[in-house]
Length: 445
Ligand SMILES: [Zn+2]
Image (tube, rainbow, N blue to C red; front, side):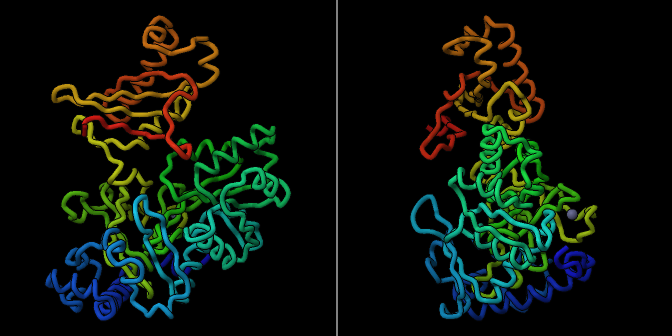
């Protein structure tokens, strides 16, 4: 562990520390940030009323729109001159979301990343191949300073230019790689194409984050790169990567560094706090940030919390994998469905490629779902058909069985019956940027 004293602090002492820090930060934002003064006044809450984390539900939520409304520096609690660094996340529409860090915030940022890398298997003296993007995005610099603080040799490769990444991994022989899970898969595919076996790749540990991923992806990255892969979670509004980290020993949920970031899980519709283990929206209060502290920030990410003891000995609460964002959730015949659940099932079926699309329609009052999924080249060659029309599939016993298998697995796991359409490789529609449009919801038309 990077900071054993804090990482294993007994939960009652952790709670005491959180309560002290919360009291301080609420007074701090009330005095310094007009947005919070107004929000608390409107909610009829005096800062002195907030004595501990049990009082958090009295406070209003902070939402992404509040950051946009105060673009660029309106939520800063210190004069801009005291801000040592600015990051921003690109919005899909309009202006980016801007965040600031004082020098002390940057030390905390490096500390939580050092803890995270150590929890993932990193040790002083090891070489870190950091393939997160450098720039306004927090990923690259977050892991970078964390690795340096831990005492590693950091290679700031940044994202993209796969050719060069492959060369550097083969020549520099890094022990640890940090990147998105999808990029780790790209690298694994590239090594396979070149006939480099996982045993020949020096990497031992992979720290993957910045997009939701599944156990199936973990298996494919671990096998493809010959590593142990764990999750890192974060968002720029709270600090960037290093808000929470899955430990190598447990590989079962990510420890939230809750001496700095206090988590709650609340009901997506009512905002009411949910008990441990229940899935809902993850909300964070920053306990130590100076430049831009946030109270009860609504992340939109869906997960649950657990305080079950962890094999690694860390006492910090764990969050489950991100099921998706509230925006991604589909309600099909009254069942909540996330595209990641479908992906998880499909990846366990070896005759399929991970390219799929869900087309949802409504016949009368009933939702109908068509799952279009690509078969592998091997399956396609075996069938020898130009088009996998329903007639071809039905006429072919093997394909018909495959379709039934997919349907059963989906029904068993997710609880929704979907009509399965097998597609030829490369025929599921892809949108610009190579990303798939996973869901076409025609109910809204
Ligand atoms: Zn653990």
